Image (cartoon, rainbow, N blue to C red; front, top):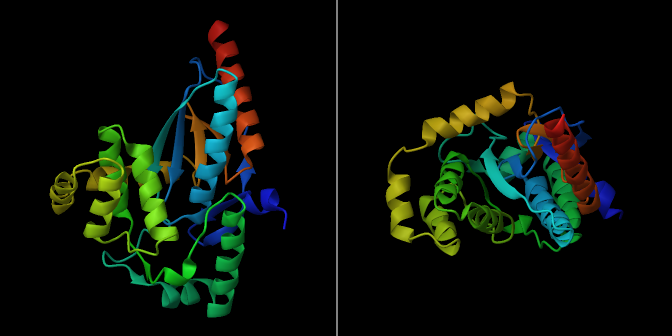
Length: 249
């Protein structure tokens, strides 16, 4: 299997087998250092894309180019009940049959293996509502451990098969990222950032995001999809160059 071609995909409301797209960077006046990623915690291509981005950033760091990564919310299933749904039944309904859902899982599992991720779709029994996961990722960002929290949430869902709609699971993820577990339990017991996460989801859609992961540099669209690391590095180099040139005009 050609892993690079398999990994150039995005997740959208209709599924996770959609061809990725690249968008030319629009003009901007600032130097590009901030990468924003619009993603969902149950998007397999977002986890694969995270690994590809990490490889790209390691290459760019060796060239003296550094970036700051920020994760932003998107709901692949915005109408999902708070308690989530049985994954097998939901995916059979969503994709037309259990066989098609299983084939998609197999394809994604193979693509994940190509970047060193051992997906265990056989352990995944629930498709969760992800608002609380996004809230925890936001909370982690306020405490400078957002990327670690994103990693922990992805790992819990895709590798450990845990229900990331469950507050106890999310508290475990946050603790793994370095946050005080009880502080996260208390945070999740309230509704802080709930409206903000939903508003950010809507804003992403209004800005034209229809599939995730979608990558932005200083707020300007770069590409969508789990592109190969080399493609990501090239896009970031080009994007920063364009922004610097525009700043100097």
